[in-house]
Image: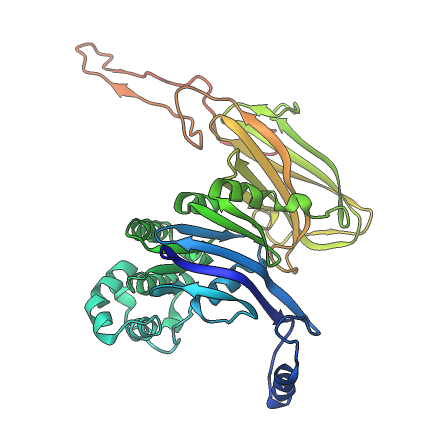
Length: 425
């Protein structure tokens, strides 16, 4: 393990559902059962469940590892075990070197203290000496961009400001290992980019990074390997491209006919022609017809588009497009959902996923999910490349003695105008 920064070796971790101790009357019996039970470590008791089951991996110095999976799969539990916040029920954890962690918004902060005071508090928790904090204080503040709010209590900070301050402190610990949870997703684009640049810089200098995110583009750009978890179990550990594809295919294995029957799914052009090959900029309608096998309440539909290598490039949902209009169906009733899209994509093969989820259910648990509802092809055009097609036009002004001094060149003939309305389609 000379080159190993950290290792999980056969880790098992369990929790109790609904465990809350509001009084000594509840706490004392629970502690008594735990202390005097002979099998509390490796066997499940009433209401217990395994958050992680026999998970093992190693991370060499200077490598970035992603831990990905649906909500509730055990990703954050793994990070909390690595950081020492939690202890495993079975197995052993090896960590070599100083640890910097950004696991939860507000973790290591006191809400009534100012940003200035919390830099000292959080830095101390992460193992920095006061002299070290004072030496790096200006750098931490500059990186966070929060100098105006440094003397404001952090309880008045937004979630993005929490993330800024937390990451700024964690990355100035000069960690040998950096643990980062999904919290960076709440930051603005420019700060997120600074964070990713910093993490790339860390790996080049030999720091190991463990990164949790649902943003597969970020995972693919930062990490060399990835661990895929589902319901606490390891599904895959290997190269990041294969892991991303495994992640996107998870729900192919989930039973969906118990709740919903898919009656029809069609992609049609603006003229109503059903096909799966389109030109960049075309207006396309996805029509999905569903029949409720069981009663469905307060649900919304979502679509996601992935590239051939598994990168998510677009998603939207009826909860964003149709405010306060959830889908409610009695058993046996049908519904038709139509998404109108302008396919401004470059040439290639794409995969379209569809899901139906309840706004009142546990996040990440779908009523219906099809990870590959449709595959479609965008024709390539030689005048541009990249992920998206932005209908490029160019005007070139040339010096001339004639009255017609300007000439337009390179104009595309198939210029797409403003998006058509539903009625026009």
